[in-house]
Image (cartoon, rainbow, N blue to C red; front, side, top):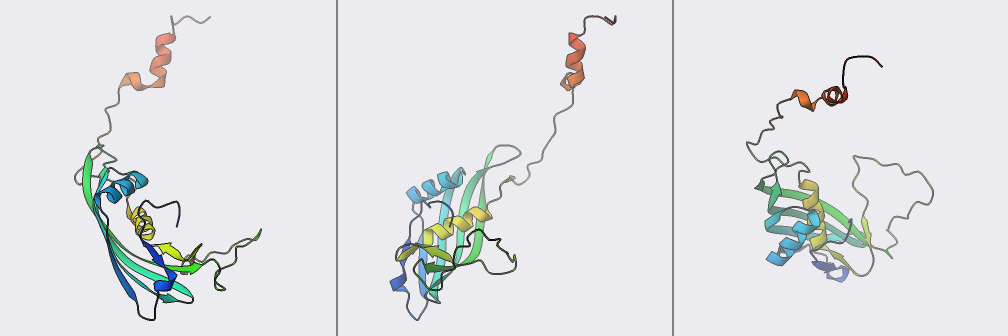
Length: 178
């Protein structure tokens, strides 16, 4: 998880049992406002998630689905508009003292397989933040250049004075060479 999430919904490793644990999260108004500021968007009208936490190695696997209604500024017209955003995600989490936690490579090249599962998140302490994972994956689903439905870009009409040579022409006093 990157950065500190404004939505804290902590889940302790000791809560993980043999059976999956289901959690439904609903962000209140203050949390939605904080998340909107964190993601640099206008507003969030609703944000909820249904999560399942199950054991994985000596840690946890979190599978979730989130839904949100966000207000963003149109990149074409600069007008605010509402948009439904939803997504599914899966993350695996291990405690830092786990023998299964991946070792940090020191001064070595790292080969990444884009088709492979992401490595597990390694967290300090005995808990991890479910709300943070929802915010992280919401941010990944947001369009960085949102466009309001029906908005079209109309380039400005070119004018002769917009040419850099038109400005130089004004500086020239006469046509006589010096």
